[in-house]
Image 1 (cartoon, each protein chain N blue to C red):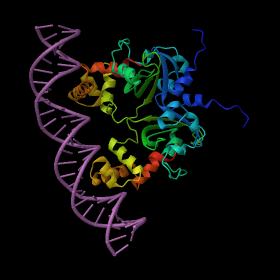
Image 2 (cartoon, chains in turn purple, blue, green, yellow):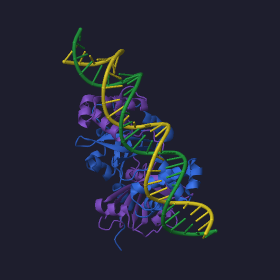
Image 3 (spheres, protein in one colour):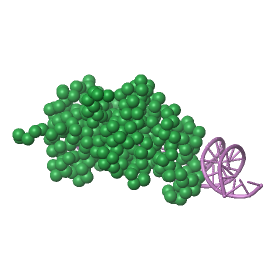
Image 4 (spheres, rainbow over the protein chains, first blue to last red):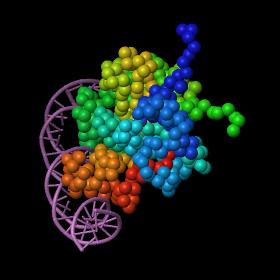
Length: 184
Length: 184
DNA sequence: TATCAATACCGTATGAATACGGCATGGATA
DNA sequence: TATCCATGCCGTATTCATACGGTATTGATA
């Protein structure tokens, strides 16, 4: 093709599956379309706004003695689940991640992501299931996995058959194809 | 200041807390720095690569009879948890989201996000806890919340006191400030 | 053929989360 | 003062996930 290449990074940013926002001193400097749409706004309605608009009314917005801020300072990032307010008034539960670009002054410049929590996610694994699948992925047998995790081989079989039933596949191996392999 | 403004959208994209990738026909066209770093690469090592590099070795990469692909076609998006392979060989469990930009041909252009799953996330709420917190956020009393959810008022108290203990706050109201209010 | 792995189906025991009850206390407010 | 609400502490019952045991079947493979 001879058409100029589109700005794919910009496209990826705007249509990312999670909302992304960059704030400076709590003021929104940029956000992607996904984020604006999530909350019922247009991007240009949000840019320049205080982050406060996303939250419940009369919280003491300046109170910063907060777990989040401390972790942000110490580790550079912070994760939780939080309720953000849609323009229409209702709340939306999101998995929230924040990363500061200036650890010395955590709020100076922060990039955040918001992913709506779907209470009926079709695919959710327990910690144990993830452990077993990871070792299955390395072609270990039940016995070997059991030894690694300090469990009975029988228990590994349990985990496997649970997964088989839950996801309706024939062999647990299929899950590896499904969860780690193809598509997308 | 007189310095030209930085490209904040670009900055937000690259330093977003979640990895973001755009593929065309399974070939990576762009990804952010977070994604590359998550897997142990430089961005320019990944651009142009087949998405296959991220996954286990000899999976039949072309087999597309997949839950994911069907949902991607039907709903435009797909979410699961999956294991991606770090350059160093070990697996990383990620919460995976895909959104296709061309529903008629789902793989034509896909934007995905990868957020590492931390098994010891300090803040995780159950569905019930989210429901109760959301209604608390609207200043409803236990009785009112109970009526809304079809539960005993006593049970709402339970949920509240569980939350109070778990997060070490004095009043459940504090959680609203913490989970929905300040910071970031 | 003999062996081993994965699967299927039969159990049981434990622990955690959830839902509920009673009751006592402290604080706000009508 | 009387009432209502949130909280704390004492219970109990149910459900589900997890972990484990035995045993039988199938399929690959040494």
